[in-house]
Length: 324
Image (cartoon, rainbow, N blue to C red; front, side, top):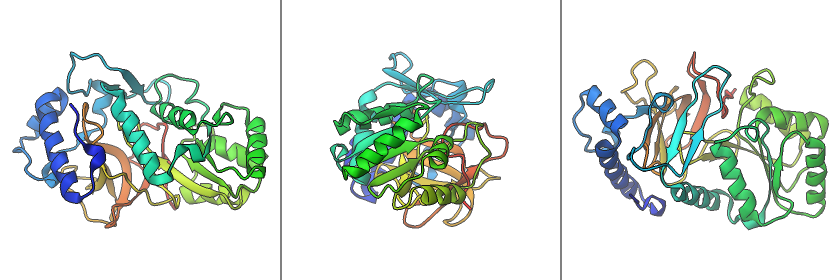
């Protein structure tokens, strides 16, 4: 079923669609229906009452509104060897495409204005990465023959970056933390026309850094470059972006809140550290209301910071950095 989530302009419109999608998923998503029933709560009549499904259910169940329909694509999470990974069956890939296109336009404009370079080792070496799918779409939409993926050939990447700067071309370089650090150490350079977008993730390759340390290193190695951050995950079909590298902004069909770390059914006020709850209305055919394992602070303007993960959570691909 399609809902006009990418046409949201007001808070009232968001809340109406959130309640419509909640009722749709309560009726059609068996896992979510069973979870809400277990809580014993009456049916929500306002957004603040909607329960959030723990993200761990994506590891153990098919979180889908119709188990009889074959998925068009399945996204899977990365994870440490031996740990159970998440699986997100996407029944309608066009919804993800629309989400990617609308959010890119909102935050960055026209993809054709950029050369898109991706430094995503490990993600490229496995199948089912929603991040790789996203960046591949950006690369194709840029329509620039220089755009592309780089695995471990950072020397070639550094040469391409230099030539693009000489040509005064706008660049988005998106990469995982450990690979960006290697590039910074081996090939520092001025990149005045480049947005460096880190997606988090040391993957056990290096000692974890807090976000401020990482960004200081990148700013020193690449003076004049803009340092941004991206927040996304396998279980969502939308991303948030931090143009300042710290506070994430969401597209109009995505909202976040913080929950009490000791009482997951209780929301806490802005500015306090809690568990990150995400409403992603693009998740129409799975579950739009997800209780993640990330720690956060939310703010009145709708932005949020990611502060790390709950203790004993699996160490996975994106945004494992803390903020100093």
